[in-house]
Length: 376
Image (cartoon, rainbow, N blue to C red; front, side):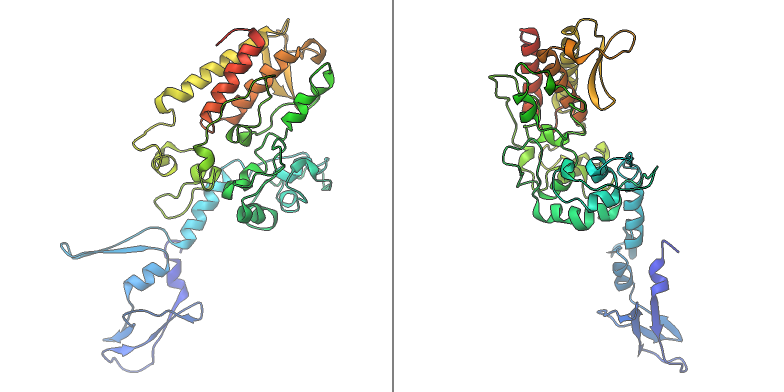
C-alpha cells in the first residue's frame, strides 16, 4: 500500500460500453482531474493511462532508455518521503527531548512542543508560563519548527541571542530557528562584567548549554581581558547557516531531518565549498582542536588545588576532586573558571571547531595563555 499509494487515489471513469478503440476517459485524483499530454483511453476493453503522468504525480522520476527500450521509475513517493523524514526526525534527539515540567518555560520553551510554539520572546529565559502535569515529556514535533514561533524564525531569519550585543542576529536564515535554542543560554558579557572582585559571577547554571551558536557567531566564549578573539567568516556567509550543512538535500529529493553530519552526504553538506573532501577532519583540523582543547582542560584543572576533573553537572560547571566531590566555587580562581568555561564552550559545541575554525583555535590558545602564562 505504501509503495503504490497513488493507485488507490486514481479513479478512471469509463463508459460501460463494449470495447472501443481510442475511447478518451478522465483520470480523477482526489476528485480533481489530472491533465495529461496523452489522454487516458479504453483500448480493447482495458483502461490505458499514461505512465509518466501517474508516476510523476506520485513524486517519482521517469526515464526512457531508447537503446534498451526500457522505462525506469526511480525516487520516492510523497508518502515515502514523509515516512523517511519522520523516521529521521524520530531518532534525531529532538523528538525525545525531555524536560522537568515543574519549572517555568525556561526549560520547556526549548524542550517541549507546546512550550516552544508558545514562546513569547526570542530569548528562552524570558518566558514565564508554567505547564502543569507531573512527568510530562513530549519533546518537539513538526509543528515546533513549521508553525507559530518556529515559522516566524524561519521566515525572518532573525533571532535574539543572549550574548549578541545588539540583541538580534539578523542574518541567520533558516538556521535562526536552530540558534534560538542552541545558543548556550548565557549572556557572557554580563558574566564577564561580574568577574572583577566578585564571586557571584560563578553561580548555578553558569556554563554553556547546547551552545553551537556561541562558536558559530564568534561571540559566546568568556572573554580574556584585553584580548579580542579571532573569528572566521566563511560559514557565517552561508545563506541558511545551520541548515545549509545539517540538513542537506539528499538524493531522494528532500532534506535530511536527523540533523547529524553524515559523511555519506559530505558532498551535499560541505562539497560545494570544500570540493573533493572525504572527511570532516579537513587537513586534520578537528584532530588538532580536540588535542588543544584537552590541553586547555588540563590547564584549568591544574589551576585548582585538589581538582582532577571538570564536568557539567547539576546545572553548573564543576571542578571535582579525586573522590568525585565538587570543589567549592570559592576555591576556584577567576582564571581557572574562565579556562574551564571556554574549554566547555568548545567541547560542548560538538563541531571540534568547524563551526568557526579561527575562533575555536583563538579561544583555546588565549585561554590557555591566560591561565598558565605560557603560549600553547
